[in-house]
Image (cartoon, rainbow, N blue to C red):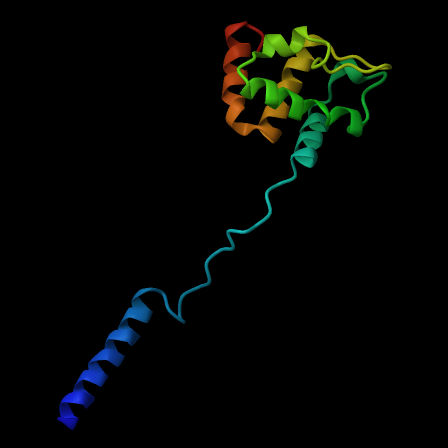
Length: 136
């Protein structure tokens, strides 16, 4: 009986050790951290805007604080089913300030950049709409 118990114990121990090595136990590399913080949409958007270098802002352009107020509004309206044309026709959503304005082609590109950073699932819709209108 003692031999049987010892044999069963040895089999269980061997099974456990084998399972650990098959599952990537102690010898496996640690998994990449999945809790890496998501990129900050404000930073991503502002970097993309700076890289775009909009000509309509050569003389006077918006501050970063003014600019980052628009994309969350655009995303909300796009997700509610409104079009890019709707955004560009409504002064509430058109990127313009007291001392600066945005040419329409720049505004269209700005909405694409905003969608990429703040509501990436809407980007394709924005691009398709602009292409269909001949604007992108």
